Image 1: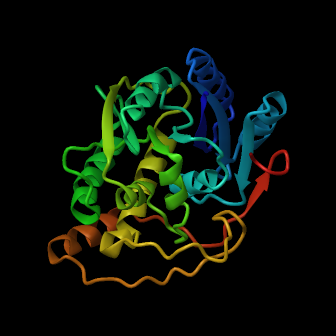
Image 2: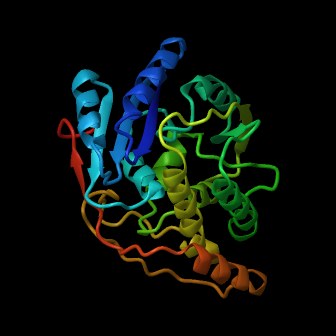
Length: 287
């Protein structure tokens, strides 16, 4: 029996790219006898016609499901929103314009070795200087603050089991750092080498936006102090339009990292109000 892979993609100003990403991904899955796919696409309050394009894809393909956030919450919130609406045996996280569908097969093959989480690691990065800087900062701080295994590299191209996904979505803080939650759930993590493709549509602005957002999520996340779960609040999903209690029991900061934490946060911080999560659904209820 084929396994269902839920492909989750947070989208921002992806009007020109998202249809190609979806269709190329479908073509790759057509080559894989053991897997079927579905898509959960989350529009992160784009300023172009991204959600209209997602709607067209939903109308064209029965395995495509779309959601739209009512304001820009960032990439990690988009991923958390999507993971609350998957039905697959595996959940595959992709970027809307940079991760290439041709690299899905190696990641799924590595998952077949029994890992709970597999990251695709780029042999040669084509990222710009801002992305490289934030990736380096993420790598250093996540290992010390979150306990990321030293021999594991992370990326925005990953796959998890449904069991891991079910644990991840129990996290209800409004500033999630997805990789940190992964590390809390499991250390049964693998890496597989993949190729990094240059993005065809629009480069630096959104790449920098996503990179900075990711590091900020790490630095202001309770995981940087003491990551733990608050439990499933009243059975409501992350995107159900409710604001959840942020209160966390924090341990004292590690003195070695307090200065780094505040310096990096001060350099990277951008204004972002914290409000409730809302979404619109395409076709009523994503499967």
